[in-house]
Length: 393
Image (cartoon, rainbow, N blue to C red):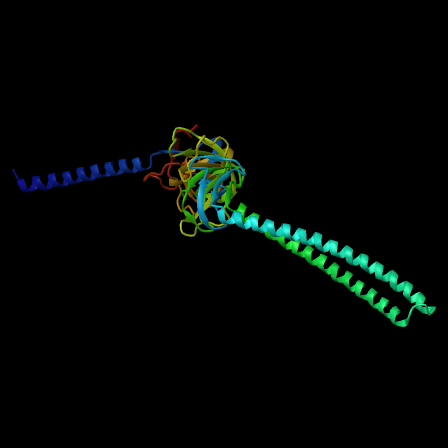
């Protein structure tokens, strides 16, 4: 047998067989790669709430650190941490011994001023009576002097006496005015000393809850030292910090749901009551204040709270996961679409973003287009595809 002739023949047939296998495999791969791929598409949803998340704390709208306007020894304290106090209720008193003496002295000065007014008034009446008497005497003597019954010297002396009596009246009147001025000064001094005495009593400026007591009896306090920290009753509210990128749709009056860190199984509701006009330049967050409709019986200031603010409710919406969007810039991005059984890429516009990171498509889709919600390496423009998943129907 001629082996040299047989082996080349076998090699040629093997190569042809191998080439055939490669061609078949390539054809199979080509057919596989061009087969219609199943893709998940978004479906129209209804009554979709759009909520914005914010993390914050419980605070109080009215917080006051109150103290005395003067300094002295703290003699009495009538409230403590956690107490509820009414407006005008006495909370503390300073030692009053020295100020009591000053008030008594001012009252005595007022009595003296009132006595001086009475005495100067009596002197004025006396001076006026003497003036009337001298005036009548002068009139008679001037008449008699004209008939040479009274000497000219006597008439001149009578005129002089009338002038002196008139001057005495003016002096008496000025003494009355001086006494009245002294009375006004004494009354003002008494009012001042009584005010300083009242400043030694600290009263609640509003209905409040005592958050902290800073001093104890016997302490020497200075003017302005805080004695109590009060919060106005019913002034609790929440302070939420919201990412600026999500805060654009927040408005006053929108509903809020809150969950306290200490009470995670309960949900509290409320409303947005204030939106800060200045954002944090470091954290890029906006401050939003919220008032609760059903706060717990006891609120702890500074406790961490999670807030969900409902900024919109979509009656009908097409929502796409943010992970299925290319080049999203906060306003628009590119998505895969299924159009007439073929895959395409479209630049679409978005509006709202839900708390589960889905974007509301508002523009850029043809009427028959379905948006792909899950990306896959098999996605190619123009490739045949079939809708699958919840949005297929």
